[in-house]
Length: 630
Image (cartoon, rainbow, N blue to C red; front, side, top):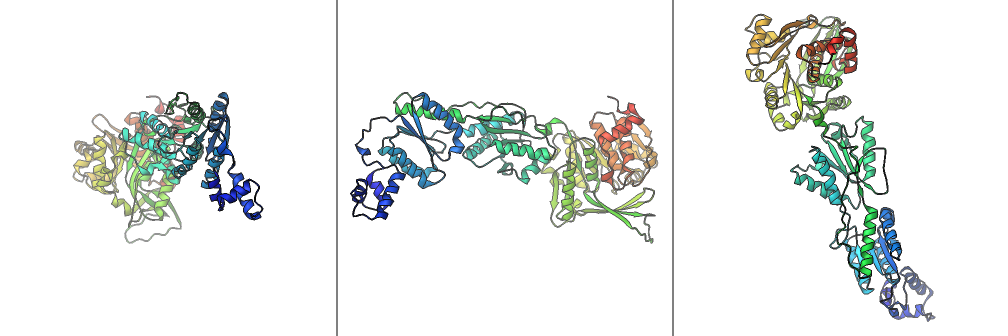
């Protein structure tokens, strides 16, 4: 700070400042004198500073920070290095205020520091460098994207964190950001790593905070791993997914950056790269001292090798852990009416008892599979109405992947009207609604819905071309298909030859083979059309299984019927689930008959679907050998 600058700041002449500073201010007003002295004090103005030797050392280094709170670890490193070299640090902070930054620079220059470590507020701050040049004070800039500035390489940290997940097989990698100086560089490293590994960058996978969108994508396993810029956000995400009953790293892999003061954290166990703040502070201070003392520069680049502290919260992607079951078909709202006798032509029936559930064969089978312990993804259409919200709530409740469920504007969600007689027999009428909107192109455009899938469950309550395309895509990927024909008549051969297991009831078998007589002839006809196995469900009479090696009837299980409308969906869920568990066909069919038996004991399909623990506990009491290891 010189006398001219002080005069300019005070809005007076140089001579006025000189008079005040030399106590010759009798003719100057008290207000002016007070203003000049206040500014002189703020800027540590020294009237004779220019006369002092510019070569004399004060053994003092200045540090000007945006905020000391965010740099306390780096300050520790600076202090250690300065003290070891015999220097004192004079620390000031701008507090985010440009005027404060300029004033502090002036103060530090006036105090004749030997060198300065400066964290500028912005590139505009660099216009004040002339103060340092006039005072012949060497300076290092840091934490700013400017030539010759020194920074921690957050881009490399972001790159390394992302690369670690890529090496484990992740491709659906999200980036969770918090605001701060590291944010943009960390994001740039994440983006560069995706580019280098030929993984598309999806903007919807970049999250600025823990949003509903992030939690939904984790719930749907659309995101398999997250790289995170700030440890506090990582712990908050851990808490959020724990509430939703998800686990690290089974459901989600997570890598975060964390400060080097945290030490070893036992809980939560989140894998992280330590930010070398303290080491960075030592490096900055040692470079400045070398400049001040005209010694060799210890290095123009801050070198740091990122090391992952643990693998506690990272693993292979969830979708690679075990194959899933995909379900393609109808999604409805089931409207139940309890009647004494089922309706018939010309007869009116009354009902005083009704109930509403989420249903449709695809929903029913998806819930059945989920309750029996498998991952399941649902592919179908709902309307753009209130009922669709109810559907998504149910999917979330049963942890069913909803990525393949599309809302269709201009359609109502499908409706099923189910009449249930007192003996459990039922009759169903369906308004297809949005189910009719699921097209073959919907499946072709997003084949990833079939990735890591062992079985694909199909029904004919959606357009037949879509069912055929689903079967074709499944066969191309080596996925076994199980088809439930419903109200469809004769099926095209192109569909049948891509079906591994066909599960009609007796009436549906008649419609599929109108020119054949007798169950043996009808099932033989279907096998000749390319179907691998035919399982005819016969209600209380059990089922009939036939393929090239097997021709056998299996009995039903003895349960008191209340509502039989979901028995076949429960049967198919059990069949697919236990085939995926590795049971041979006939054992899987027998287990499925128990699942179907449980389903008829309660009204509504979804509420009556059995969970694995209950099902197996019941079977062990009656047929313990049925669940014996294969």
